[in-house]
Amino acid sequence: MKNSNEKLNEALKVISEPQDSKLVTYLNSCVHCGLCAESCLYYLATKDEQYIPAYKVDLISSIYRRYCTFTGKHFPKLTGARLLDEAMTDEMTDQLFGSCTLCGRCTKHCSIGIDIAYLVREGRKMLSKMDIVPAALQSTVNAALNSGNNMSIPEEEFRDTLSWMGDELKDEVNDPQASIPLNVPDVNILYTLNPREPKFFPLSISAMAKIFYAAKESWTISTFMYDVTNYAYFTSNDDEARIIVQRLYDEVLKLNAKRCVLAECGHGSRVFRWEGPNYIQKAFPFDVITSVELLAEYISNGRIKLDKERNKELVTLHDPCNLVREGGVIDQQRYILKHAVSNFVEMNPFGTENFCCGGGGGQLAMSEYNERRMKIAEVKADQIRKTRASIVVTPCHNCVDQLMQIDNKFKLGVQIKTLAEIVADAIILE
Image (cartoon, rainbow, N blue to C red; front, side, top):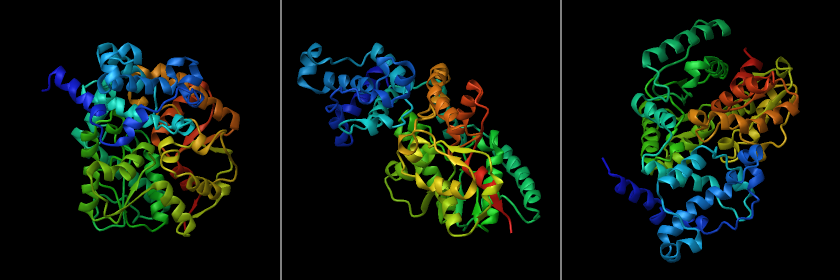
């Protein structure tokens, strides 16, 4: 066990011995113009200046000045340099964990291009080095590390759920040979899940299984490692994030799957597909795509046929931050909805300008900030209300959870569906 001084030194190494040059560049770049303010849900909902993203940048840069610059070391009051003491860590925890969804919208609007979400994650990394992480968030990570999934679902329970979902699939497609295959080697696709699906939203599993059936796909689900999420990305504990990435990487190789298809999860897609090779320091010898891209591929290649008249209600789309603003998967879901629904309306704003639902960055896993999370949700509720849509589609289960809570709190009277569910509703079985 490391003592407090050792933990402090480890935290300070994050800024004193950075792994890349952009950290120091960003810490020295903010001009406090304030253009990031209106991009932030927390500031828009409260008008409290402490929630301006630039304030978060200054928290971290003030520590950098105190420990890494001559002026800050010897004349701290002249530069606003601050010690990394208990008062500072309390403020950092509240600001960096409790007041940021890591949505990246402030980065898009920064006048000089500072990646503010990246800086917040580096600040979280400093706290993580000192074992200062909100307990509920860390428990989610611990569950994944100890059980293989973030909800600690026992394998027997998982198998039972998929077994009865498989029986329902047989009935729906009227084919006794239809199934949800488990641990099958040498397939085309290893499909992942968000553990909330088998626990609370099994219909999204059956929807994707129906789509795979219609596409005559060769696929499987692993009962050992199926969790697409990686909450260690939110705690910024790279060692723990690396373990989770490595497990999924190893499972794809073990089953000799040609492709790993990531379920509808914004941060899960980002962490494994785009950040994963950096975590484990090796290129993936297999294809990795999101289920959103796969659905668009199926439609464009004619592997599934849809009747959009089966979805006649007015539908709008919520763009998950990690998938859209950070991942660039923007047009595919709109292409899918063009073929799957007959009446679609965009939110305002939408795409890379869309507002976060308020549940990202680990917020849904940190119960101590629930009141604040639902306060900023007013922005999203207002967006949805103005569309007059009766169905909100989003390709992210984290967003699904938050949007359901928004619907309940603000009495919107809308249905929340995944993209797979809306496609399954429109699919034509030959």
